[in-house]
Length: 367
Ligand SMILES: *Cc1c(COP(=O)(O)O)cnc(C)c1O
Image (cartoon, rainbow, N blue to C red; front, side, top):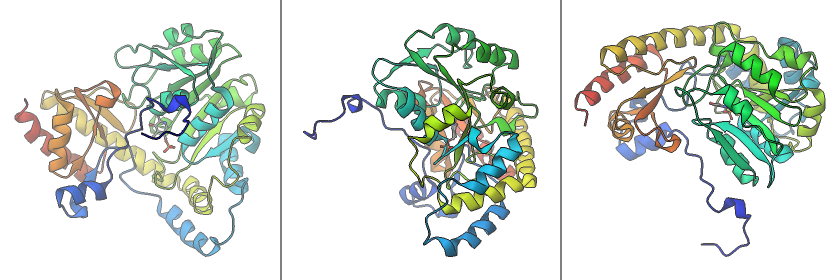
Protein backbone atom coordinates (compact mmCIF):
# COMPACT_ATOMS: atom_id res chain seq x y z
CA UNK A 1 0.00 0.00 0.00
CA UNK A 2 1.27 3.44 -0.83
CA UNK A 3 1.36 5.89 2.04
CA UNK A 4 0.94 8.87 -0.29
CA UNK A 5 -2.00 11.17 0.52
CA UNK A 6 -4.17 9.91 -2.33
CA UNK A 7 -7.34 11.47 -3.66
CA UNK A 8 -9.95 9.62 -1.51
CA UNK A 9 -12.09 9.01 -4.60
CA UNK A 10 -9.45 6.53 -5.81
CA UNK A 11 -9.83 4.23 -2.79
CA UNK A 12 -12.23 1.63 -4.19
CA UNK A 13 -12.35 2.88 -7.77
CA UNK A 14 -12.32 -0.12 -10.14
CA UNK A 15 -9.94 -0.26 -13.10
CA UNK A 16 -11.64 -0.63 -16.49
CA UNK A 17 -11.22 -4.14 -17.92
CA UNK A 18 -10.80 -3.93 -21.71
CA UNK A 19 -11.18 -6.79 -24.18
CA UNK A 20 -8.02 -8.91 -24.23
CA UNK A 21 -5.50 -8.12 -27.00
CA UNK A 22 -4.79 -10.83 -29.60
CA UNK A 23 -1.04 -10.83 -28.85
CA UNK A 24 -1.58 -11.37 -25.13
CA UNK A 25 -3.93 -14.32 -25.65
CA UNK A 26 -1.66 -15.85 -28.32
CA UNK A 27 1.35 -15.57 -25.97
CA UNK A 28 -0.56 -17.13 -23.10
CA UNK A 29 -1.96 -20.05 -25.10
CA UNK A 30 1.15 -20.57 -27.24
CA UNK A 31 -0.91 -20.09 -30.40
CA UNK A 32 0.33 -18.31 -33.54
CA UNK A 33 -1.04 -14.74 -33.59
CA UNK A 34 -2.70 -15.45 -36.94
CA UNK A 35 -4.90 -18.14 -35.35
CA UNK A 36 -6.47 -15.88 -32.75
CA UNK A 37 -9.48 -13.72 -33.57
CA UNK A 38 -10.87 -10.92 -31.45
CA UNK A 39 -14.63 -10.46 -31.20
CA UNK A 40 -14.40 -8.63 -27.89
CA UNK A 41 -14.32 -4.85 -28.37
CA UNK A 42 -16.80 -4.05 -31.13
CA UNK A 43 -14.03 -3.16 -33.57
CA UNK A 44 -14.50 -3.08 -37.34
CA UNK A 45 -13.63 -6.58 -38.65
CA UNK A 46 -12.91 -5.13 -42.12
CA UNK A 47 -10.08 -3.03 -40.70
CA UNK A 48 -9.36 0.66 -41.26
CA UNK A 49 -10.30 2.40 -44.49
CA UNK A 50 -7.48 1.85 -47.03
CA UNK A 51 -7.71 5.56 -47.79
CA UNK A 52 -7.02 6.38 -44.13
CA UNK A 53 -3.95 4.13 -44.19
CA UNK A 54 -2.64 5.88 -47.29
CA UNK A 55 -3.19 9.34 -45.81
CA UNK A 56 -1.41 8.40 -42.59
CA UNK A 57 1.51 7.05 -44.61
CA UNK A 58 1.83 10.43 -46.28
CA UNK A 59 1.72 12.20 -42.90
CA UNK A 60 4.60 10.21 -41.40
CA UNK A 61 7.37 12.45 -42.74
CA UNK A 62 5.94 15.45 -40.85
CA UNK A 63 5.90 13.82 -37.44
CA UNK A 64 8.71 16.04 -36.14
CA UNK A 65 6.17 18.89 -36.10
CA UNK A 66 3.47 19.36 -33.47
CA UNK A 67 0.00 18.66 -34.84
CA UNK A 68 -2.47 21.45 -35.55
CA UNK A 69 -3.90 21.93 -32.05
CA UNK A 70 -7.22 23.09 -33.49
CA UNK A 71 -7.44 20.22 -36.04
CA UNK A 72 -8.68 22.77 -38.54
CA UNK A 73 -9.23 20.57 -41.60
CA UNK A 74 -10.68 17.61 -39.71
CA UNK A 75 -13.13 19.79 -37.80
CA UNK A 76 -14.12 21.69 -40.94
CA UNK A 77 -14.84 18.43 -42.80
CA UNK A 78 -16.79 16.94 -39.90
CA UNK A 79 -18.75 20.17 -39.44
CA UNK A 80 -19.67 20.26 -43.13
CA UNK A 81 -20.83 16.65 -43.02
CA UNK A 82 -22.98 17.30 -39.93
CA UNK A 83 -24.29 20.68 -41.02
CA UNK A 84 -22.87 22.47 -37.98
CA UNK A 85 -19.94 24.86 -37.51
CA UNK A 86 -16.51 23.82 -36.18
CA UNK A 87 -17.43 25.71 -32.99
CA UNK A 88 -20.06 23.02 -32.34
CA UNK A 89 -17.35 20.32 -32.16
CA UNK A 90 -14.78 19.09 -29.67
CA UNK A 91 -12.34 16.27 -30.44
CA UNK A 92 -11.07 13.75 -27.91
CA UNK A 93 -8.48 10.97 -27.72
CA UNK A 94 -11.35 8.55 -28.14
CA UNK A 95 -14.80 9.55 -26.94
CA UNK A 96 -13.56 8.26 -23.59
CA UNK A 97 -11.60 11.48 -23.31
CA UNK A 98 -14.73 13.53 -24.00
CA UNK A 99 -16.33 11.77 -21.02
CA UNK A 100 -13.35 12.90 -18.96
CA UNK A 101 -13.73 16.50 -20.20
CA UNK A 102 -17.35 16.37 -19.05
CA UNK A 103 -16.13 15.06 -15.69
CA UNK A 104 -13.70 17.94 -15.23
CA UNK A 105 -16.33 20.48 -16.21
CA UNK A 106 -19.39 19.16 -14.36
CA UNK A 107 -18.56 16.52 -11.75
CA UNK A 108 -17.38 17.09 -8.18
CA UNK A 109 -18.26 15.98 -4.66
CA UNK A 110 -21.93 16.72 -4.08
CA UNK A 111 -22.85 16.38 -7.76
CA UNK A 112 -25.01 13.48 -9.00
CA UNK A 113 -24.57 11.65 -12.29
CA UNK A 114 -27.52 9.65 -13.62
CA UNK A 115 -26.82 6.46 -15.57
CA UNK A 116 -28.69 3.27 -16.37
CA UNK A 117 -28.03 -0.18 -14.99
CA UNK A 118 -25.84 -2.02 -17.56
CA UNK A 119 -24.41 1.23 -18.89
CA UNK A 120 -21.01 1.79 -20.52
CA UNK A 121 -18.50 1.22 -17.70
CA UNK A 122 -16.55 4.43 -18.23
CA UNK A 123 -19.43 6.72 -17.13
CA UNK A 124 -19.51 5.61 -13.48
CA UNK A 125 -15.72 5.29 -13.36
CA UNK A 126 -15.20 8.93 -14.37
CA UNK A 127 -18.04 10.14 -12.13
CA UNK A 128 -16.57 8.37 -9.10
CA UNK A 129 -13.06 9.51 -9.96
CA UNK A 130 -14.34 13.09 -9.78
CA UNK A 131 -15.98 12.39 -6.42
CA UNK A 132 -19.53 12.66 -7.78
CA UNK A 133 -22.34 10.33 -6.72
CA UNK A 134 -23.56 7.82 -9.32
CA UNK A 135 -27.34 7.37 -9.45
CA UNK A 136 -28.07 4.09 -11.25
CA UNK A 137 -31.58 3.62 -12.65
CA UNK A 138 -32.75 -0.02 -13.01
CA UNK A 139 -33.01 -1.15 -16.61
CA UNK A 140 -36.08 -2.66 -18.24
CA UNK A 141 -35.45 -5.78 -20.32
CA UNK A 142 -31.74 -4.86 -20.42
CA UNK A 143 -32.59 -1.46 -22.01
CA UNK A 144 -32.71 2.06 -20.63
CA UNK A 145 -35.83 3.13 -18.71
CA UNK A 146 -35.71 6.70 -20.00
CA UNK A 147 -38.83 7.98 -18.15
CA UNK A 148 -37.37 6.63 -14.89
CA UNK A 149 -34.03 8.23 -15.70
CA UNK A 150 -35.79 11.57 -16.19
CA UNK A 151 -37.47 11.11 -12.80
CA UNK A 152 -34.11 10.38 -11.16
CA UNK A 153 -32.92 13.93 -11.83
CA UNK A 154 -32.54 15.96 -8.64
CA UNK A 155 -31.34 19.52 -7.99
CA UNK A 156 -27.86 18.01 -7.47
CA UNK A 157 -27.79 16.24 -10.85
CA UNK A 158 -25.25 17.69 -13.28
CA UNK A 159 -24.96 15.01 -15.98
CA UNK A 160 -27.04 12.16 -17.42
CA UNK A 161 -25.50 9.59 -19.79
CA UNK A 162 -27.56 7.62 -22.31
CA UNK A 163 -25.86 5.38 -24.87
CA UNK A 164 -28.17 4.64 -27.79
CA UNK A 165 -27.67 1.94 -29.02
CA UNK A 166 -26.36 0.87 -25.62
CA UNK A 167 -23.15 -1.00 -24.89
CA UNK A 168 -22.98 -3.75 -23.55
CA UNK A 169 -26.63 -4.67 -24.21
CA UNK A 170 -27.08 -3.59 -27.86
CA UNK A 171 -30.54 -2.26 -27.00
CA UNK A 172 -32.07 0.76 -28.73
CA UNK A 173 -34.45 3.23 -27.10
CA UNK A 174 -37.48 4.27 -29.12
CA UNK A 175 -37.24 7.62 -30.94
CA UNK A 176 -40.33 8.87 -29.11
CA UNK A 177 -38.82 8.12 -25.72
CA UNK A 178 -35.53 9.75 -26.67
CA UNK A 179 -37.29 12.87 -27.95
CA UNK A 180 -39.35 13.05 -24.76
CA UNK A 181 -36.21 12.73 -22.65
CA UNK A 182 -34.35 15.42 -24.59
CA UNK A 183 -37.34 17.73 -24.11
CA UNK A 184 -37.71 16.99 -20.41
CA UNK A 185 -34.15 17.27 -19.07
CA UNK A 186 -33.96 20.52 -17.07
CA UNK A 187 -31.41 23.20 -17.97
CA UNK A 188 -29.10 22.45 -15.02
CA UNK A 189 -28.44 18.92 -16.33
CA UNK A 190 -26.18 18.05 -19.27
CA UNK A 191 -27.73 15.20 -21.26
CA UNK A 192 -25.00 13.21 -23.00
CA UNK A 193 -26.37 11.05 -25.82
CA UNK A 194 -23.55 8.61 -26.61
CA UNK A 195 -23.98 7.68 -30.28
CA UNK A 196 -20.93 5.42 -30.64
CA UNK A 197 -22.96 2.94 -32.74
CA UNK A 198 -25.40 5.31 -34.46
CA UNK A 199 -23.86 4.72 -37.91
CA UNK A 200 -24.96 1.06 -37.77
CA UNK A 201 -28.64 2.07 -37.71
CA UNK A 202 -30.51 2.13 -41.01
CA UNK A 203 -32.77 5.02 -39.95
CA UNK A 204 -31.22 6.76 -36.93
CA UNK A 205 -33.02 9.44 -34.97
CA UNK A 206 -31.26 12.68 -35.93
CA UNK A 207 -30.49 14.74 -32.83
CA UNK A 208 -27.92 16.96 -34.54
CA UNK A 209 -30.77 19.30 -35.52
CA UNK A 210 -31.53 19.94 -31.84
CA UNK A 211 -27.95 21.12 -31.34
CA UNK A 212 -27.69 22.98 -34.65
CA UNK A 213 -30.74 25.11 -33.97
CA UNK A 214 -29.35 26.20 -30.61
CA UNK A 215 -32.45 25.17 -28.70
CA UNK A 216 -30.61 22.71 -26.41
CA UNK A 217 -27.52 24.18 -24.76
CA UNK A 218 -27.58 21.21 -22.34
CA UNK A 219 -27.39 18.44 -24.95
CA UNK A 220 -24.13 16.86 -26.08
CA UNK A 221 -23.92 14.11 -28.72
CA UNK A 222 -20.89 11.87 -28.63
CA UNK A 223 -19.52 9.86 -31.55
CA UNK A 224 -16.37 7.92 -32.33
CA UNK A 225 -14.08 6.72 -35.09
CA UNK A 226 -13.45 3.51 -33.12
CA UNK A 227 -16.45 1.57 -34.36
CA UNK A 228 -17.79 1.92 -37.91
CA UNK A 229 -14.70 3.79 -39.13
CA UNK A 230 -12.39 1.00 -37.94
CA UNK A 231 -9.86 3.28 -36.24
CA UNK A 232 -10.08 2.17 -32.59
CA UNK A 233 -6.28 1.97 -32.34
CA UNK A 234 -5.92 5.56 -33.52
CA UNK A 235 -8.13 7.05 -30.76
CA UNK A 236 -10.58 9.69 -31.96
CA UNK A 237 -14.01 10.65 -30.67
CA UNK A 238 -15.98 13.87 -30.91
CA UNK A 239 -18.68 15.79 -29.15
CA UNK A 240 -21.37 17.86 -30.85
CA UNK A 241 -22.92 20.59 -28.71
CA UNK A 242 -23.72 24.29 -28.51
CA UNK A 243 -20.68 26.54 -29.02
CA UNK A 244 -21.03 27.88 -25.46
CA UNK A 245 -20.67 24.39 -23.95
CA UNK A 246 -17.89 23.44 -26.36
CA UNK A 247 -15.96 26.56 -25.32
CA UNK A 248 -16.07 25.41 -21.69
CA UNK A 249 -14.95 21.87 -22.55
CA UNK A 250 -12.06 23.30 -24.59
CA UNK A 251 -10.62 24.69 -21.33
CA UNK A 252 -9.93 21.19 -20.02
CA UNK A 253 -8.59 19.75 -23.28
CA UNK A 254 -4.82 19.36 -23.62
CA UNK A 255 -3.58 21.30 -26.66
CA UNK A 256 -2.26 18.36 -28.72
CA UNK A 257 -4.62 15.55 -27.71
CA UNK A 258 -5.39 14.78 -31.37
CA UNK A 259 -2.11 13.78 -32.98
CA UNK A 260 -1.08 14.38 -36.56
CA UNK A 261 -1.70 10.80 -37.75
CA UNK A 262 -5.21 10.87 -36.31
CA UNK A 263 -6.00 14.10 -38.11
CA UNK A 264 -4.76 12.77 -41.46
CA UNK A 265 -6.33 9.32 -41.07
CA UNK A 266 -9.72 10.48 -39.84
CA UNK A 267 -10.06 13.07 -42.57
CA UNK A 268 -9.51 10.39 -45.20
CA UNK A 269 -11.81 7.94 -43.39
CA UNK A 270 -14.63 10.48 -43.55
CA UNK A 271 -14.29 10.62 -47.32
CA UNK A 272 -14.42 6.82 -47.61
CA UNK A 273 -18.18 6.37 -47.54
CA UNK A 274 -17.82 3.07 -49.44
CA UNK A 275 -15.89 1.57 -46.51
CA UNK A 276 -18.61 2.67 -44.10
CA UNK A 277 -21.27 1.17 -46.39
CA UNK A 278 -19.39 -2.14 -46.66
CA UNK A 279 -19.03 -2.26 -42.89
CA UNK A 280 -22.72 -1.61 -42.32
CA UNK A 281 -23.65 -4.36 -44.80
CA UNK A 282 -21.18 -6.84 -43.26
CA UNK A 283 -22.68 -6.10 -39.86
CA UNK A 284 -26.27 -6.48 -41.00
CA UNK A 285 -25.53 -9.88 -42.56
CA UNK A 286 -23.37 -10.98 -39.63
CA UNK A 287 -26.03 -10.16 -37.06
CA UNK A 288 -28.69 -11.98 -39.08
CA UNK A 289 -26.39 -15.01 -39.30
CA UNK A 290 -25.83 -15.11 -35.53
CA UNK A 291 -29.56 -14.62 -34.92
CA UNK A 292 -30.39 -17.67 -37.03
CA UNK A 293 -27.58 -19.90 -35.83
CA UNK A 294 -27.85 -19.15 -32.12
CA UNK A 295 -31.63 -19.52 -32.17
CA UNK A 296 -31.09 -22.94 -33.77
CA UNK A 297 -28.67 -23.82 -30.96
CA UNK A 298 -31.33 -22.85 -28.43
CA UNK A 299 -29.49 -19.73 -27.27
CA UNK A 300 -31.35 -16.77 -28.81
CA UNK A 301 -29.32 -13.57 -28.71
CA UNK A 302 -30.56 -10.35 -27.18
CA UNK A 303 -31.87 -8.31 -30.16
CA UNK A 304 -29.16 -5.80 -31.03
CA UNK A 305 -29.04 -2.54 -32.96
CA UNK A 306 -25.24 -2.38 -32.87
CA UNK A 307 -22.22 -4.37 -34.12
CA UNK A 308 -22.24 -6.80 -31.18
CA UNK A 309 -24.79 -8.70 -29.14
CA UNK A 310 -25.35 -10.30 -25.77
CA UNK A 311 -26.21 -13.96 -25.47
CA UNK A 312 -27.21 -15.76 -22.29
CA UNK A 313 -25.00 -18.83 -22.15
CA UNK A 314 -25.33 -19.86 -18.50
CA UNK A 315 -21.82 -19.57 -17.11
CA UNK A 316 -20.38 -16.70 -19.13
CA UNK A 317 -16.88 -17.04 -17.72
CA UNK A 318 -16.72 -20.74 -18.62
CA UNK A 319 -17.86 -20.19 -22.19
CA UNK A 320 -15.47 -17.24 -22.54
CA UNK A 321 -12.56 -19.43 -21.37
CA UNK A 322 -13.53 -22.33 -23.65
CA UNK A 323 -13.82 -20.05 -26.66
CA UNK A 324 -10.49 -18.46 -25.80
CA UNK A 325 -8.84 -21.91 -25.77
CA UNK A 326 -10.09 -22.22 -29.34
CA UNK A 327 -8.48 -18.89 -30.25
CA UNK A 328 -11.63 -16.75 -30.06
CA UNK A 329 -11.63 -13.76 -27.74
CA UNK A 330 -15.07 -12.59 -26.57
CA UNK A 331 -16.14 -10.50 -23.61
CA UNK A 332 -17.32 -12.00 -20.33
CA UNK A 333 -19.91 -9.82 -18.60
CA UNK A 334 -19.50 -10.49 -14.87
CA UNK A 335 -17.99 -7.02 -14.47
CA UNK A 336 -21.30 -5.65 -15.77
CA UNK A 337 -23.33 -7.77 -13.32
CA UNK A 338 -24.38 -10.02 -16.22
CA UNK A 339 -22.43 -13.20 -15.33
CA UNK A 340 -24.70 -15.47 -17.38
CA UNK A 341 -24.04 -13.53 -20.56
CA UNK A 342 -21.31 -13.22 -23.12
CA UNK A 343 -20.86 -10.24 -25.45
CA UNK A 344 -19.72 -11.09 -28.96
CA UNK A 345 -18.76 -8.57 -31.66
CA UNK A 346 -19.79 -9.26 -35.25
CA UNK A 347 -16.75 -10.31 -37.30
CA UNK A 348 -16.11 -11.19 -40.92
CA UNK A 349 -18.25 -14.04 -42.33
CA UNK A 350 -15.36 -16.48 -41.77
CA UNK A 351 -14.84 -15.30 -38.18
CA UNK A 352 -18.55 -15.58 -37.47
CA UNK A 353 -18.68 -19.15 -38.79
CA UNK A 354 -15.68 -20.09 -36.66
CA UNK A 355 -17.33 -18.53 -33.60
CA UNK A 356 -20.64 -20.34 -34.18
CA UNK A 357 -18.85 -23.68 -34.68
CA UNK A 358 -16.94 -23.18 -31.44
CA UNK A 359 -20.11 -22.16 -29.59
CA UNK A 360 -21.86 -25.27 -30.88
CA UNK A 361 -19.08 -27.40 -29.38
CA UNK A 362 -18.80 -25.47 -26.10
CA UNK A 363 -22.52 -25.11 -25.45
CA UNK A 364 -23.13 -28.81 -26.18
CA UNK A 365 -21.04 -29.66 -23.10
CA UNK A 366 -22.85 -26.99 -21.14
CA UNK A 367 -22.49 -27.22 -17.42
C1 LIG B 1 -16.86 1.93 -27.90
C2 LIG B 1 -17.65 2.95 -27.18
C3 LIG B 1 -17.23 4.27 -27.14
C4 LIG B 1 -16.02 4.71 -27.90
O1 LIG B 1 -14.90 4.80 -27.17
P1 LIG B 1 -13.61 5.44 -27.84
O2 LIG B 1 -12.93 6.04 -26.65
O3 LIG B 1 -14.06 6.47 -28.82
O4 LIG B 1 -12.86 4.33 -28.48
C5 LIG B 1 -18.01 5.20 -26.48
N1 LIG B 1 -19.17 4.84 -25.91
C6 LIG B 1 -19.63 3.60 -25.97
C7 LIG B 1 -20.93 3.28 -25.39
C8 LIG B 1 -18.86 2.61 -26.60
O5 LIG B 1 -19.30 1.37 -26.63
